[in-house]
Length: 251
Picture 1 (cartoon, one colour):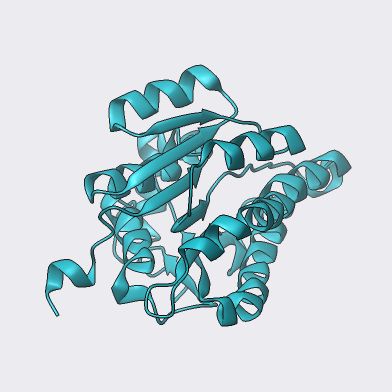
Picture 2 (tube, rainbow, N blue to C red):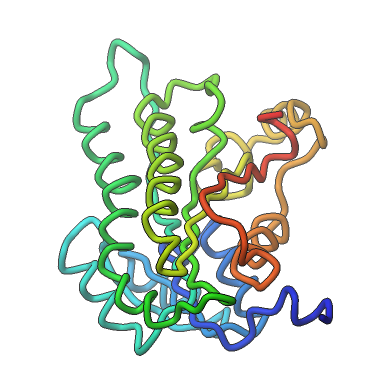
């Protein structure tokens, strides 16, 4: 056993949804640098193609909130799929008395149903890659807001991410006999479009960092490293877990 082979993902085929920016881009960049063949998807064609060109991976423009978008992504991936990273998601914030019903519908459809149905559609290719000593992997991106009660009024987001965590556990139990592991990571504050409203302001950024026990905002390597671990031989005996990547916030 060598340290390199223990954490290697070289040659694996990886799909990262919402991979054109933010946490998805961080994860995709990590897999590319580790020698994996990576597909990234986003509904904005120009954006995903620009990111793919900069990373050296394959761009698949696809709106995963539609059946046609899901089909386009599945059809773009040739052969067995070793790792599916369900990262695409959305958020919404509004005061309790004003929180709109359509926000719940939108976030449930993207954050939970999108994870379920894309995993379902990719099952034949995940099964083709699965082996007892090297399972196929599904990595869902949840959130610390699905573990602890957030201070901001993002009711649909926190509820949907808690749903992602339970869906992860349920799928893990169902797919374990087929040698497919299903785990989730729950990021805390990272530099992303979703967090830009807070982190772009220096004073707010400092305040958020001060509430993280480790005292800082997450780095790209933090989340990429967790995903690579879950996809490597080192993570092959782990399934049904939700791993907080949050600097200690949920502890």
